[in-house]
Image (cartoon, rainbow, N blue to C red; front, side):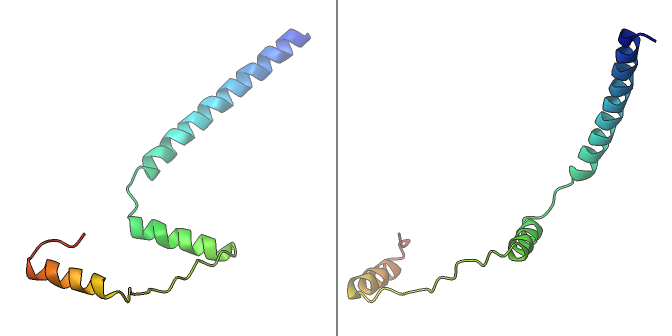
Length: 84
């Protein structure tokens, strides 16, 4: 066999392998097309992040001590207007 025939045979075998892989990808797309709930994705992401060593940022809730904020909220609730 000459070199051109060998290259042609290799191209044919690679073309067949590519077609097989495209069929597998198509079947995988059909399987993964199902919708995964967001809470499941969040749980998986949190588990992977924890496994990789990332500890989330913990923040403490602080309430404003300003009397103006409390007064504005009371007025808005008395008037039945939404608080901004």
